[in-house]
Length: 338
Image (tube, rainbow, N blue to C red):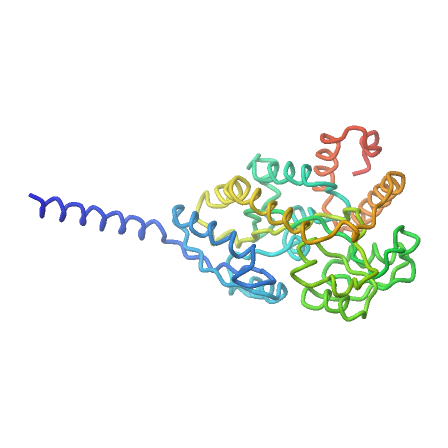
């Protein structure tokens, strides 16, 4: 009797394994940009995404890339079916979601969470914008606010930026135009060398999220007199961009919801934890009057860049509505320029 039950149980387990294997019939080559590689936070978060995807019948074959440009090129060439990269890099593939990383458009993490929730809602009006041609954004998570890292704490207002050199990412034209707008000298860089130029004193300023402080050792470039300007210039995001035809039916909807419900808070916790690396005396505080002045300057720049086609007008309108939902007293809420 015992042997019969054991055989039955083993057969049942075997059949379960067959079902599980049969479900995972769609193989997706998944390229993940993480500047730390397979031990980085982004790659580790996405390991759990891979496990969950198996239950949806999708087998994600993950590869880590420490150079975002290579991950991007491999995706374009068809070596990857799905890629995880920054919104700054993916804007060329989907200007709507790629415009999340626009300057000054998401002022804090509460607004960031609402934006992520809206994009994961699969509301038909939103969902239509998640796809652009062959490419579809099937998830996004926060990578943190971006700040100016400077070598001298006397750079505490916009006038002091004039004449300074700054590393800007060559594929994000908005960074270069904004730098030139306030009189800085932009130095074209990429994700692999922008921090090195700051750390070896080739430039005076760089633009980065807080996670870069330790990961890219920006404290070396700051030296004893440097600091971080306490004004959010933008929010960086990690975005999952797929070739639509490679995905089984319903996977994109499931993915967007899964990433928001299961990875957003964990990604935000990684961001929040990165602030503990920075001592309070490193922050260059901005008074309320200047903050309001910079908010208006950022808005004018976004309006210009949207007219020039750099940012997506529909996304700019959505972000304005969400900002005003969180803070109806903002000056921009009384007039609709975005």
